[in-house]
Structures are given as structure tokens and as C-alpha cells.
Image 1 (cartoon, rainbow, N blue to C red):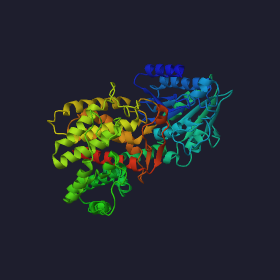
Image 2 (tube, rainbow, N blue to C red; image 1 turned 180 degrees about the horizontal axis):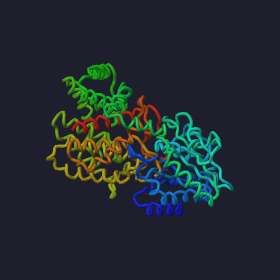
Image 3 (tube, rainbow, N blue to C red; image 1 turned 135 degrees about the vertical axis):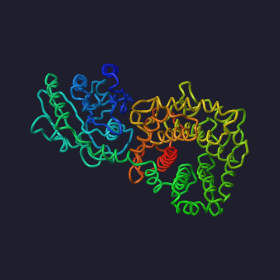
Length: 563
């Protein structure tokens, strides 16, 4: 909606440094759902009460104009309120309805204002994708109060049970229906968190200023809302040290190795890294020795017909287990896997890498060939690796990476794989290697491009150049890990710390006390078009891939903090 975006840009410019224009989701037509995010919205601690304004779920222009009126009024009273309220806003939750004139329906005939809570199809539902995006984004925004505004012929306040005392009107009605967005967010454990109280104001445009003045005065005075229960859950998650989160994740992931694939191997590696950080842990190494012994003894076939870099990375723990035990069998097994790589022909990718230079292989090859060099001292492994990275030509002028030569899309985890792959490569590449400067320059350019696209929550999007695509866990873990590793080993300076801490905050909030994770993209090969990347399903709960990458990120953060 160009007119809406123009209005929001003007508001952000008018209130300098108060808001950041962002997007909280996508519509059926894959148009962004715009949001104004207050500068304090994601601060770990703030004295301000966080209020989220939402309007336009109806798709009615009048409702959107009412929300814009609230924002304009807030600018005028912010100083008078003494900075007591941090207001963020989703002025139009149904842009498709607004643009098509089909309010309250979107272009697919869905109704974004009803049907909550959504239970599946994250993040694409044929009729109501908006509800999935709004549900998750608002949940992890975790305001202290949600305010919905609607136009009507008279003034009416409605409140959820937790917000009744905050309504300016005495005897505010109970907010309904039960499947409305605000009512559903105020009940149970939405998004696996806790309730968020809500108010709804139905009013004429003429009565809006007076009603809002009454509300702001209450919220800035004796009726200032307490931190919402959802916000408290996230605060509790954020307050955990990286080592605490690593322990939680390691209790769930890295406990199996079937099949032999990187999602299992990285988690086993993460458990070994955690054990090294905790010398008192005497159980992890023997447990992993028992877990992998069938493959070492030959009782169990390692790869079978699955011979790909992702399978080789199922052994990425081998060098760490060799160090922990002194048993060279693990290193020998790993090197035998690395020896399956062959030189590429005429500058091509080294088989069994994908000939289209997929970014997955930047991580897979960096992890395998880099470790093989460290274990053997043979530079042939580095020759294969550096040639692959320098010849890939999937990094674009803006610093971001296409998924592959045949997939010109900035997939989030694809960019995470690239960042992780270069970090792994630089870990093992000698400081005097002739290609190191060129590879480091590519890596820094990439990380800087990702920092520019990092959301206010700290997260990277499922497609990093599509604002409103969902906030994806694994890409953020890999991005954060690459920054932490670079700072640990000295090729990145302290200017990356703010982006790193923000990424850690976003990830920490999305790891629960049982090791469940929020919105890692499911297994993804090369897709046919941009829409297939945007609509790729996300996992909520236990996920080997998300858990493994969170564990590596957590242990690397702990290592950096100890330095």
C-alpha cells in the first residue's frame, strides 16, 4: 500500500529516532504488512510500558485512518507523558482488503480479523496467511498491552480480563468474540508464552483525541500496565546465560546419529564443545563414544547410498572426539570421508558438491575440508576449499548470497550457510594463506549486508531481502555464530558486538525450557521461485536442525564471553 507506507514514513520522519519502519508479515498477495516499531520495543530492560496499536484488520480505510490518528496524537503527547509509553503499531493488519476494496476479506477470501489462534500452516495458509504472521510476530513482540481501534457511530470500550482496569470507560464490556486476535492472545499460552492483555476502542473520529488522551493519562499515571506475562516469559529466557541455554539444548539434541547427517553431527559436536566448557561433566564424552562406536567398529554402515557433503558433516564431531579421547580412529574416519572429495573440472565445484555451487556446500565443505587440513596438514584439502569458495560467484554486489547459481534468491538459511561456511574456513585457513585476504573480504562484506537487514528483534528473515517474511531461527543462529567466532579468533572487531548481542537475544527468546525452538525453516532444497522460499514451512517445537545450530551458537557465545 504505497499511500499507507508514505504516511508511515512521514510519521517516522516527523518523530525523529522514535520509530523504525518494519514489516510484521505478508499478505496473500505477498505484500508486506507494515509496522512502526518503537526504539524501545526490544530493549532487554526499559521503564516504558510497551503498547502495541493495531488497526485495519477489517480492511476498512476508516479504521486505518483512525490508527494513523492515534499515532499522530502520540507524537504530540509523548513528551508530556514523560516517556512512560513505548508505542509500536500495525496500522493495517489486512492490506489486501484495503487495496482490493473487499474488506473485511483478503484477496483469497479469508478474514484476517477472525479464526484465532491459528494452529498450523505457518507461515502460509491458502486463505489466511496474515493470521499466522500476526500471531507469531505479536507474540514475540510481547507488548504489555494491545490496543485495537475501530470506527463506529459511538464510543465503546472493550477489555480482556487482564486489561479491564486499564479501560478509561467504567464498565468496559468484555472483549469478544473468542476467536478474535485480541481475545485469543489474552488466553492460555499463545505462541507457547503467556497471555497479553488487550483493549478495543470503537469510536468516531471526532471522539478519538479525547478518548486517547484519557487512555494515555491513565497508562502514564496510576494505571501504568505491568509487564505482560508474555514479556516476563521472554525476559526469563533472555536472562539465561549462554551456558544455561546450551545445557537445555544439549539435553535434547545430539543424542542420536541416525542417519549420519549434519543436523545430528553438529549437535553431537555441540555437546562435546559444551563438555569442554564444563570440565566437571564426566558423562558426555563416554556417552558419545558409545553412540558412535557402531560406526567406528564397522558394525553399522556409515553412509550407505547417501554420499553427499551433508552426510560427511554427520561426522563433524570426529576431530573434537579425537581431542577428548586421544583415539585417532575418529579422526581417521573423518579424513576418509574428506578424501571422497574430488577436484572440480574447469573451475567447477568439487564433487560430490552440487555443481550449481549451493551455499549449503559452503558450510559443508568448509567444515569437512578445513578440519581435514587441521588433522593432516595436507594443503590439498585447502586447495579444494578455497577454489570452491572463490569460484562460486553466487555472492552479489550487495554482499548477499543467492542460494545457488540456478536459484537467484536470498534465502535466509542459505545466507546463514554462507556465513557459517566462511567462518569455518577462516578458522582453519593459515593466516599467511594467499587466499585468506580475499575470502575475509567476501565474508566481512556479507556480514555487513546481513547486519543492515537484521530486524529490530535481532532476527533475520526467511528471505533476507523480503521484509515481512518470517523471522527464521537457523539463519540467525548461523549469522550470530559467524560473528561470535570471528570475534573470538580476532578477524572481526568489537563493532560487531551490538549486532551479535541482538541476534543472541532473538535466539535466546526462541529456545524454551524443554529445548523447543521457534520457526526454523524445514528441510529445503533449491526451490523453483521466490514464492516457494517465502512459503516454506516453519517448525515450532523440537527440531534437530534448529536445536543443533542453537547449540553451536550458545557454546560460541559462552566462549566469547569468557574471553
